[in-house]
Length: 64
Image: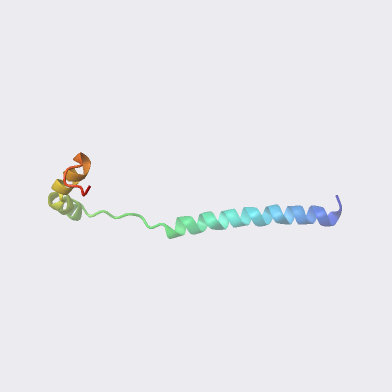
């Protein structure tokens, strides 16, 4: 291999490693932590339409 080919190979590997590191950084920076309010969760559970879920799970009330 010539010096140019070696430099090109090393540069390509370095660019790939930097790209992977940058993508990992973007992924960590873009994901927001989920904040769940206990009050909102309780209100959702109390008001959830369980009768509709039961119809879906049992197959009753579905259009044929």
